[in-house]
Amino acid sequence: MAIAYFMVHMPMNFFPANNQGDGAILFCFIFLFLVFAGPGCWALDNRQRR
Image (cartoon, rainbow, N blue to C red):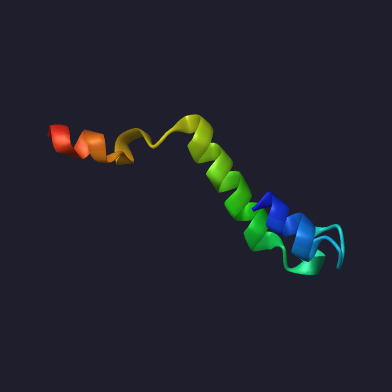
């Protein structure tokens, strides 16, 4: 998503609010959070144990 932001949205303007890049930035940070935090209680492994 960061690559998508820099290739598509950044040439228009740097700031996400001005170039409709809000979604790309949002998904980028959500994916990074899930990579480092893990799925937690939403994991399918936790549902199978119950």
